[in-house]
Length: 227
Image (cartoon, rainbow, N blue to C red):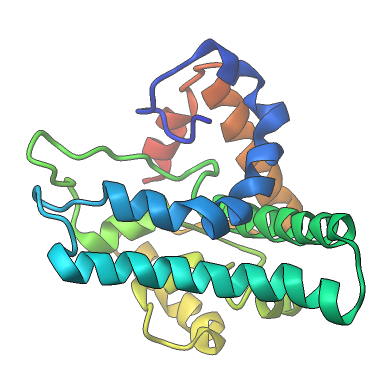
């Protein structure tokens, strides 16, 4: 997948607009099975692992134990108490992860990989040009702010700009906060990217995915004009 103009382009990605949902569907399953272990073995910051020695071993054991507990109650308990076959439990397990993966992926993609957002890259020292708050405004988008059902269902993540700017404030306050943020952005000439409907946000995301797959980077100029 290619989600950013700075990402390496591969010919197969011209078809990513068609197979993107396969990867979205396996996201939750990947998190559950492999991601924690990948991050455990690959994580380093300034050449230093988060843990070392005995503490690192304890962290690994904790991962293994919690994974074992999870797969036990997801597979063993239904087979023991509901008398479902392993195949039935497996189908249910994969289905729930496919649905959750699709929902999670789409919600977050509609808030970031849409028309109007920028895709800044750090300089040779690893620094981003703009300060933190401006960076959030340029790289994040809201959608469906007036739809109470979607707001309730996704826990306010459709107010992604406010979610980034005020992560410690309960999402029930985002609707009112968004009015202040939008007005302040206008006063300082900053972008406030917003798609009124779920369908508009989805179309915008698919447009970007398609253009990135074709290596058509014309949308960058549009984002620069918006900002």
